[in-house]
Length: 130
Image 1 (cartoon, rainbow, N blue to C red):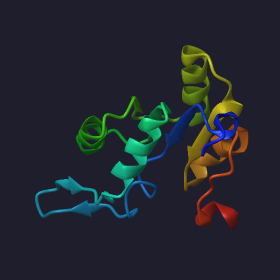
Image 2 (cartoon, rainbow, N blue to C red; image 1 turned 180 degrees about the vertical axis):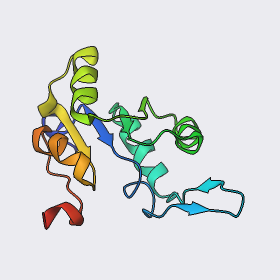
Image 3 (cartoon, rainbow, N blue to C red; image 1 turned 90 degrees about the vertical axis):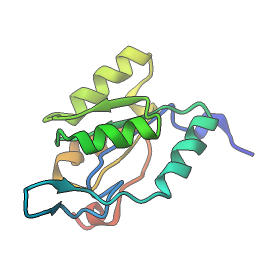
């Protein structure tokens, strides 16, 4: 069914705009909310069934993302990242894979460097017009 040679050995993603609708929601007390799509959990389960670990790499640093990552048993969570390419390159060294083995999904300017180096074409529409 699946050709293991063509599957990534790691799927890494941004969070805002990839796992969420991209909106930032605040109540009158200043509490922040994010709207996650529950369909993403099926993708995580599918990747885990193929023994493909998932990493979330985000510039934000919020408890909301930590809770979502914990709920879905995300393998690696990196928050507050300013250099996502460096973070993923270091993770690749740690788990003994190459950047060409990584599928990265991102949708913002700070994702471009990593999108150019990763091994799979998984760019969202927004980046296709850049």
